[in-house]
Image 1 (cartoon, rainbow, N blue to C red):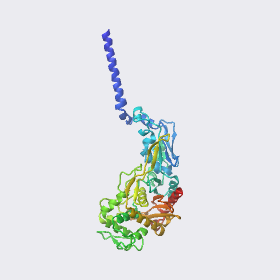
Image 2 (spheres, rainbow, N blue to C red; image 1 turned 60 degrees about the vertical axis):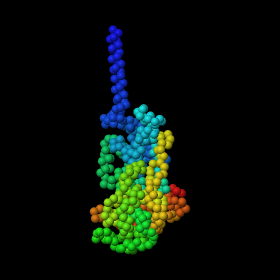
Image 3 (cartoon, helix red, strand yellow; image 1 turned 90 degrees about the vertical axis):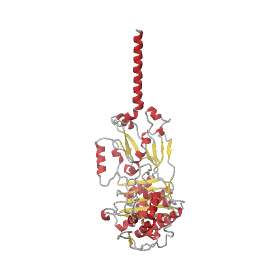
Image 4 (tube, one colour; image 1 turned 120 degrees about the vertical axis):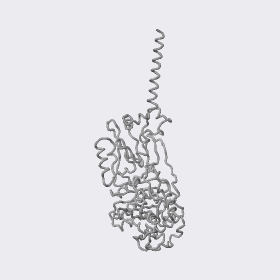
Length: 487
């Protein structure tokens, strides 16, 4: 009898060991694979079992959570959803996440290891902490001024504090309410279909994800390249540019919208936006020199994050001289996001030192404990300080005496550059209206804000668009809001 009992005990022990080994295999070694299995609904249910952390603008949460009493319990809600959609993006139980909701998803959903009380705590406990908070750099008054200035027209505004790189306004128009995509069911899928089918593309983040021909606003970059390279040493001296200017290697004559551009100086060319002078200078700088210059401003950077992904602005790496001439005036294949052109204005305003733009000031745990803090860092020295000083004077002249007069603000220095970007087959489309600029209060030590505005469907006549008729007034409203904040 005893041998039988012994054998039975050994068999039970072996079965117990087999059970323990199998449990360890499932719970430890196969845990990640099972978590990622599409058939595993528990992971999705756990993700929405607790409220999501909030995105905050100037101490006020612009997001929230609603208890739906459904298996996917908590749905995302948005305060002033259309106003802040280009910042927050959406967090949808059906379609995933975008923008800050995506870039900071781990922290907002409570799965970020930095929220754990101890290292590897979440991995051991298989749990998560309450969702953290994302504190943005956005200023509510600037955001609203830009949103109301666009007034539903297709376009975008990006505004940066030049000294720090903090993004203070980020608006895309027309916009949408991200809350309509938060949950599940036919209402959500219907809203998704409707928004994606809309001709105005309200879900497109034009400030970060859409690139446009920058037109004459790009001439600031070309001017910086020419000054840094020593092609121009005196901004008031004639440049020797003929009018008309024949594109190199072609019979094509480049026209000017302005008068008096023949043999004009760089200062005159910036003030009145002479195509011939700037195209000529771009060719003299050469492709290698222009590529070096544009990279310092952020063009062709595929890795730019703020932390939301930014579409790369383009300046072709291989061009003939005639193509280079057109690229130097913001045409041909040159394209830029509004954020990129705000970076150009910020570099000029900040003495040539371009600060890396960022949208998240800090992240915190649910109890307010700081998890991470964004600090200022330099993106590039975009140009020599002496070059920046000369460009500042020329951009001030554009607003004081040139095409950007609609951006002028009493009691403040405003530097700017207007632009008109042709598009469509044969350039028959209504031109895009551009304005980039910066503002400095008369007694302030440094500029308060750099801004870029693009309006796609400008309704003004072409000559008014190129003179700042559509974009400059919007920029002025945002710059005025920045001055009020500073005071």
